[in-house]
Length: 291
Image (tube, rainbow, N blue to C red):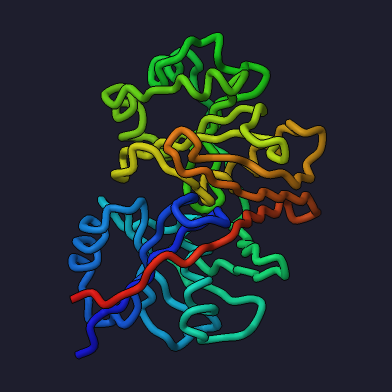
């Protein structure tokens, strides 16, 4: 029986030890659900992916995604990182586009000439709006730090996310989650990720700064969250934060964790609704055999 092989990559960065870490496993057809979960917990990255077969099925590659605590339907940096492994390490295709079969459905990834991978996320869905005073207590900031010009809203482009607009970068840096209050809010909520953002940025080429908290899934804070930033792109488009439903901006994340990340966000409105794309680069870090 073949032993599973693994690859480590950093996603949403052009340099090692930045971005978000990903472990991707292949030759893992014999692993049970419980074994996959144990491996994800052992590695303890925010996500670990398993390519179930090297052979495409129904036009896509079957992939499963696990956090340290649970399997999830969709996640952003695992989608891009796994697509990179399929094309550039396993050489299963040389096409500039491939499809992953995830629990959320088919996610298409495109490889651009400048080494940026783009994924098209599923059409956005919008949930309830939340109370600023409650969120301020959860985030450990003043209610006056929240930008009340826009709603505190649940959004999903594959992974439900509560989007909270903050007035400035200083407020974003001060956020410190009260775990007890956080779990009280999210246990019965649709969105269990909280994304806070500011339109002040760390880098001049960026238009946004972002932090994402997902302790429900065993991720106290995430370094780069393509799924949640897809939800953010839908939010920005819907509420015209940049004056238009069409969007093409860069967001910075992970700076507070010492893992600077850059995520490219695009939104286009057409007769079918809002189309969401999230892009970023992938860097190889290590590979080996899981003994």
